[in-house]
Image (cartoon, rainbow over all chains, first blue to last red; front, side):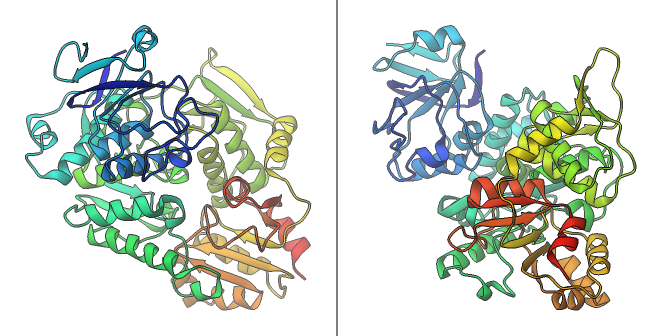
Length: 129
Length: 384
């Protein structure tokens, strides 16, 4: 289901993970790089991407990590999830990073490298370019 | 979620950046939990205080927002990492102490009451029945919903802080009517506080937002707190309804077998090098009872006793503190077992405790062994 959790308008390139992300502990709060060897985004920079992943997991303190990467200019431009979890929702709210959820079908069809524009005020928030 | 015109304007930033951020948090939380609107709350209780849990990122965030954020309703605070009166007795570095004091200062600047307690329901007056509050501490949220006739969701540190600043919370889940789909039938005979802690832990695992619970006898405050603490540790559930539930409700037993499973999960050591009492912190009744139990006896190993500062001050006047110190207790206010930086696995192999909540964090966060015993067993086995 489409939900707009944090509104905004950005353009960028998709970086997609099929693994959920635990922001506390696996995402470096300075570089925004995922340090978990078993994660599909291991060592990939998330900076300035539109980060697509199923949902956040782990401690709610992970919201501070999202705030930190934004303060350190290493955060994604926006995040798109399948399921709204409170850690990512509040983290994006703290950091003012646009966040929406999308249907399972749209999540399946979206791929790393796609260029999109996201506008939460539009009736169809995602535009594929 | 529907917003009023004034709320919309705050979300657009017309009341400043801090209000805008606070509204973003409540809107994101409200959308995630399918809230229909925001409603006023009268009391917020914040987590996210201990430097051991929020770290540099949290300390910096609070320092930044405290420049202009001010709380709009009565706001109280969870424990921090240490008791300033005796912190020099423990191996904490200067950085930890100064960062923790900065966090304390930021909250006080925002107008928060520096209560440093996880039992706000025991040390503050309870508002009238049905009052909406926003409690981020899980045992306190469960106690408020189950025993104090208050209404709160299991808030995050952020939704509770935003609610404190705005004076409102998203109207969803337990704030509305909530009918549990599970009834837990308590079958264990002769339960003590450890049993109730394990029952709570089990209920938190099987329940969603709330559970019915039947078969409970008379419970004292220690047992009620143990049950709330246990539940808050293991899941997202935040309310006990003390009813059977209608015939369509799924019924689950909590008997010796279920209790043994929880025990096996959390009890990892035969004995402890030190004892902790508190998580949740002890109230005045528990301190009075502990003092009576220890009459003429002394601990044979270290025993850390965690309590709110206001309880410590009352207990001092009555003479309990002198008596507990004579028995060898280390009295610690403003902090608690849960996520304590004062117990380090370099010095301690295992800890004896009667707290299921404490056991969970000692095992998973401090990385030490845990030896579960009821208070009665602790006094019998560990003092003379």
